[in-house]
Image (cartoon, rainbow, N blue to C red; front, side):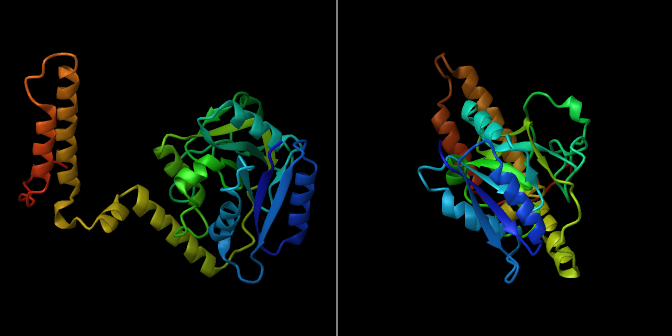
Length: 288
């Protein structure tokens, strides 16, 4: 039975941590290893704390999955086993999450994700409506199991997202590389979604900056433009024009596949690449 490390970013609330660890000790999956990153004194916040644990375990050959877990999330006894069984049976799944319920055990507080921006909107259907595992847009970092193969391919959480959005960002990055994110209703964790114990003006600022970075990274393409150094030639209009040209060439090559081509597709592609390196043309009025 491979060991399953459970990474807990901890901050000050010792009673919740003990309850969390007690729930881990009660797991029917017998080989769980707890890693607590204590932020009480240096407070490196959520993402950096999680990354310490991920870096510690993701390259170990005896570790196939790791769990990221909030200090106030309490897994039911078969939670880890249900997630492991599902991921063993579904190699395309890079991230699997349990349902999250309130303290009454019946009210779903997270049962999948809708919008990620700016602060996340969660699916909260009646408990009885969840039966079979299903894909979701992004995983909730309060309790998520990650395949170490996915971590080795995708990398750690984005350190620029210090407190929030790093779970959705990691999910989007994994999905962009072909991995899937699932909710496994047979696995359940208690998490009431209460306000964070780290409530201050400084933390509010960190959260706003995280949300802004996430938006600029995924919703506007700003990060790509910042990193690419392609200058004024990279405009949204220009990119859309070239993308349409490429789609046209793809359709042309697909039509010619299996028949004697009247146009050399390799020459056409080289011509397109040469054109893309020409100086940008003046922008003409028209619809975006």
